[in-house]
Image 1 (cartoon, helix red, strand yellow):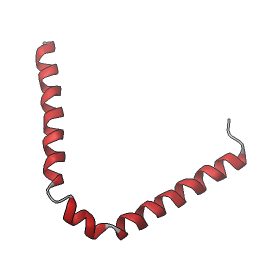
Image 2 (cartoon, helix red, strand yellow; image 1 turned 120 degrees about the vertical axis):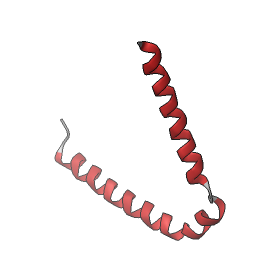
Image 3 (spheres, one colour; image 1 turned 60 degrees about the horizontal axis):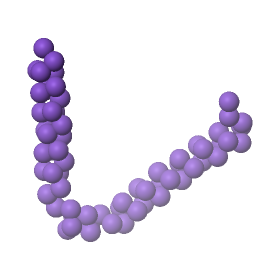
Length: 62
């Protein structure tokens, strides 16, 4: 389905992309701690809301 060159390019691209993302995240870690403080609670609230919607859907189905 894919040629050998396309597979090599995809794997190389993924490896370089992940390395770049890790480097960039580490570089901006101080800023993340300042500007995104408390964002974990937002994520947990969002996941709880999605879970509540799922429970309501299952409950109303029966």
